[in-house]
Image (cartoon, rainbow, N blue to C red; front, side, top):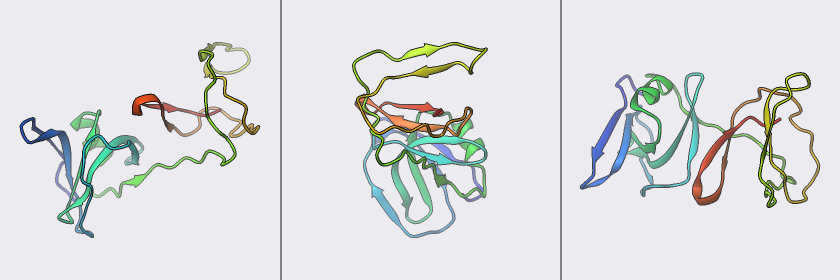
Length: 153
């Protein structure tokens, strides 16, 4: 990012509400060029903001996107001079996170493990990874494009 604050652009007659952050000069990219695209997690200053890109580098110096976060959260996370990068978490290739028809449950057991949620899956490969608690956030996309942040156990 450059040294100017990101701004909120509200213009219901011309386009949906969106944010614009000025960036240091780079290759021009008007991709994807549409609204309501798939969410992308971007890492900033000790944070992750989930955005829906509109243009990655408009005229080579403006990053335009949609987000549910506030302009304050965006400016704090994407502080001036920060290189934003995509958050990628790796789920093993042979693991298929397809839920079965049973509801997820909440497991409260402070003597044995921290509180957690458990969702049953259709049969898939077996994995005990990552095997610890308080892991990095992972954004999972579900029905109708909803995104939920989880910390895999």
